[in-house]
Amino acid sequence: MYFFLLNLALLDLGCISTTLPKAMANFLWDARAISFAGCAAQIFLLVFFFLAEFSLLTVMSYDRYIAISKPLHYETLVGTRACATMAAAAWGSGFLHAVLHTANTFSLPLCNGNSLNQFFCEIPQILKLSCSDSYLREIHITTVSAFLLLGCFVFISLSYVQIFRAVLRIPSQQGWHKAFSTCLPHLAVVSLFMSTVIVAHLKPPSISSPSLDLVLAFLYLVVPPVVNPFIYSMRNQEIKVAMWKVISGCFS
Image (cartoon, rainbow, N blue to C red; front, side, top):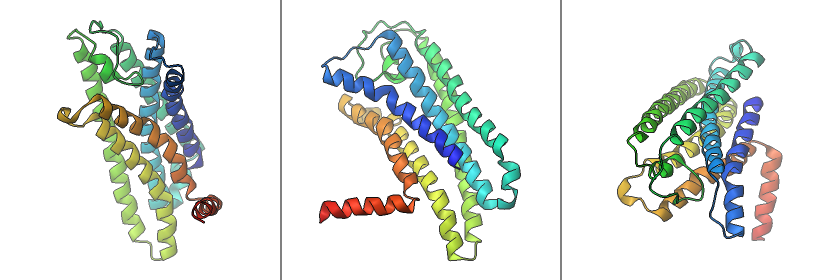
């Protein structure tokens, strides 16, 4: 579990470092420009980190399923080599999708200006600048990626159905608490990740506006990477005590 948490932390760090430093620099220097290469790098890294993170969350659901439903077989099914292979597959899937999306997006002719209504480069905003029907290729690739993400979501859901069935068969309250304390942080991270992305990209066009798009982009780019460490840290009793002292000191 801690091996996967290390990978998740690296992905979160990479994701939030892709856009915020440039956005903060533009704000401080009152600039709004980004180079073509910088824009391509942002899109590549964003797709890479986001898809790799969701793939890793899928792997982590399988890890939790084996740990709780088949604990006696855990070392056999999820050994060191298996963990490394699954983590490498998560990073590799993100890299492959990032190459496909970046190469396809920046092969489109852009003739509707070069101004994006966003504080970072993202594929939907760049597609609005295209005046060629070849943007349909990107839509096809995006559709394939969406189905893969849907498959990951179904796998996570089925894993947790089996996990909860196994937990309900545990006779002791202590066993319930231990199982849920292991699973709930991961489930909270998945829910936060999915909800912010779905709201940002599947909202009705009728309620779309530049200011709303900006707020939603901030939510799915910044909130999950910042909140994830706090969610998993809540399992640590020392961190709980320290945070409680800080909160108590603020209100005393």
